[in-house]
Length: 219
Image (cartoon, rainbow, N blue to C red):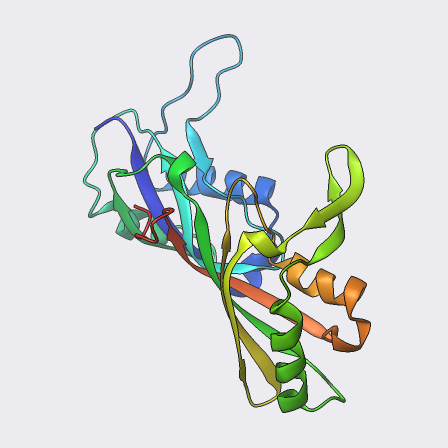
C-alpha cells in the first residue's frame, strides 16, 4: 500500500485556519494518532503529505482531499477513527481509501453559496443574478502571478443556478478546479466590478464535491 487518500471536512471555526497552519495541524494529528508519515529522501526531507486543492481562508468544505504515505501498513477503515480522536474542532475525516485517480484528473468542483442582501429584496436579486451570470462573457480584473490583468471567468463556470432563501439568495454551481482554477470568491468579485448594484453585502461558499472531466466523482 504505497499511498492513501483522506476525504475530510473543514467547517465551523476551522475555516479560518490558513493552508499552512492546516498542514501543520494535520501532521500533528498523524503524530498524536501514532501514525508515522513517510518522509522524502535527500538533503531536505519533508513528510509526504499533500492537499489536492488548497482551500481559501474563510471557505468551508466537506470534500477536501489529502494524499499521504505511512512508514508502516495501516487499515484504511480504522484511520478515520484514530485521526478524528485527535483532530481539533471543525476538522473531521470522512473516509480513507487507496487513490483511484490522479490529482491532475480533478477537473470540477461543485459548490454552494449564500449571497446576503440587507436592504434589497431577495426575489429581485435572484432574478438579477440569473441575468448577470447568463452572459456569454464575464471579463474581470484578476490578480495573476504577473500582476493584474483581464480574465474571462465565464468559461470556468460549467453550471450555475440560484434559489430564494429566507434572507439570502442561494447559489449552486459547478466550476473549474484546475486549468483554469476558479476561486468561488471571484463570483462575488465579478459583481463588485461589473454590477455594483448586485454585489451582495456578504457572500460565503462551501465545496461539496469533486469531479472528473466527465462529471464522475473523483476518488
